Image 1: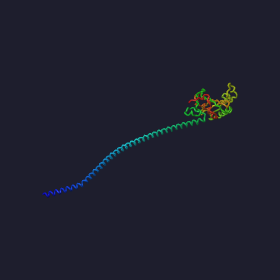
Image 2: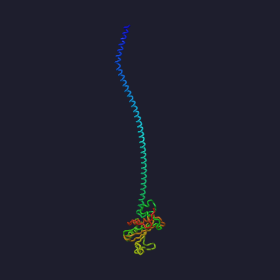
Image 3: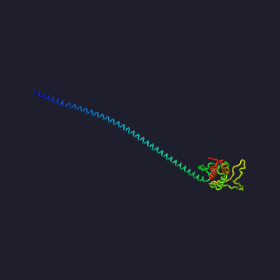
Length: 293
């Protein structure tokens, strides 16, 4: 019995010793394994922390990107609205410009019509000594028809003078020839030296005017008529006298119809047209020839 006990104890001691040796061999490996495991856990934990930080950062970036994207959308919307406003303004400006162009075209057309009317009136009256009895918008633009008299001589009349470079005889002869020819429009006519009662009055007054005190300058006196295109006849009286440097012509025109209190400038026109036809300058108004705007 004792021997068996001793054998068992010896086996237990041998087993314990072997276990101790085994433990001595295993322990360093276990510690190393544990250390490696701890290090791995630390790495994993650090990676997880970095991953969380990355995810959080990505979330922030995504949020900021979304905000920036929303701002960009708002900017595009504002630009689109501004473009619409600019397009509307351009359309309005184009419409206004088109309206202005249309208005300008209408004005130009109206001006062209006025110019055509003026040209027609000017063509009609520039070659005749007729102003016409109408008071049209173009009337005052017809040559020499602005001196509208209103009965200065009881009837409408115009008295004017002009200095001529030629001598008295040459001036009279030119005037007489013009009247006898009918003038520039065929409406002038020199009156006869004999009246209806047979009285004779020569154009050449000789020395008769110089016998007055003071003497009169008029060596020649004559009369004539002018008929307008409308058949109105005006009476013309003309005297030619000598000056120190040439000659002077005094002329008058008087309406012959009863109650001619507005001649539409016709009496001045009769005289101005005659002077122009003779190559003289415009006559200087002395009396009548009133102007009404």
